[in-house]
Length: 182
Length: 305
Image 1 (cartoon, chains in turn orange, red):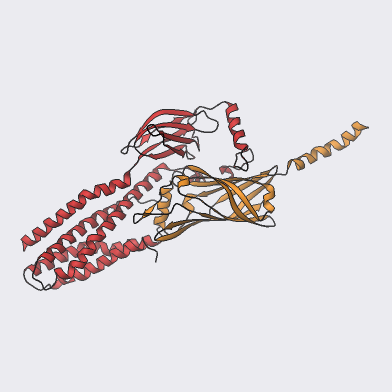
Image 2 (image 1 turned 90 degrees about the vertical axis):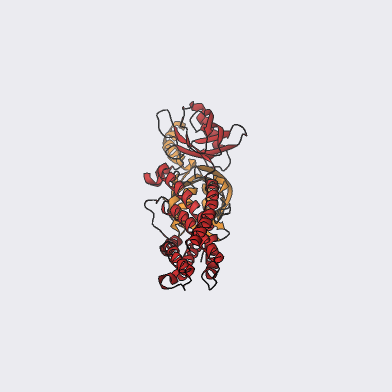
């Protein structure tokens, strides 16, 4: 009797196992706006990129996210400034800024999250703990906004100067991302 | 007349020489550090991306770290001295080079060939990383750069282009500093202009004007040289204030040539006791337009308006 029950229910049990393990899902970065802000006594300037690419893979309740953006894609409206930015951040040698994070899958339904970020930029790696982001989920899309409190010293970048006055160390990066679930 | 011009030129040259002595120290300030560079490879010669390269100054213990790029190249800008180098990468044994000398004149090239570590060690490293609470990790499910559809041109580092950018920035920094220095005698020359060309028969103000004008011209020449000779970066489309800055150069450039020529003519006429006449009478207006264009060029890349 027990053997019969086992034979009948075993295929069903095996089929249900992945559900308990947590279904895999993927997220793709659909739209992005990354904006860095630089402060100088004579200037306030911003560089914007819409060229970020990103992917998130969720497995067993955890999502691994990777975003990469070409350094050259940032446009401040001044080609001379952009070339200086690429030079000072060694953007030709290290052409990508990458951001990695790992989040619980349940965060997708939250309105705010705090993420630990690992950012590779200018040949250096910096980690940012508990960076707050706002989330807005609508259907299969999540809109994420926040500001990464980056500084030049985090990436060992010499502050560029104009008229012998250096820019401020703080270069906050505003993030505006729309992720689409596959 | 020629004696006056000679005296003025000599005094101008003296001031130029003084600035000439100061200029190298100004230029040297932008150089500063030496460069340690190289490539990190695996036993087969393949690039080890993201390898950590740490230089520890032997006399002070001061450390500086850089990560290798996707092609395995790294670059550290360090004060001259002796360093101990450590190459580290997940899955490889740590490589130590006990002594490397960095000097400011020639980049030191040191490649690091890493040996693969035992599987136990790499698993341990992964486990330690995974144990960090809410920390970025690299598990089997983590997306990689190859998943993002980036082209090889977007992911591959280009040290040659970086070297070109470094040279460009270095030259433009000197251009900027020399431009600022040039502003001082330029303004002084313009201010003294009316006194030099007035009804006064005295030659002191005129001589000083000529000397400052000569100094301005020489410094301007150095400033222009560093802008003209700075390397162009292929594929760059000019946008923003730099276009106005360069447009102004088409005014103050010819102006800086015409002004002294007209000035010599005016100087000659004044020393003959004549009233400045003919083309020479354009010396003042041309100088004003030139100085105005120079000032506008400087402001266009300095202040947002």
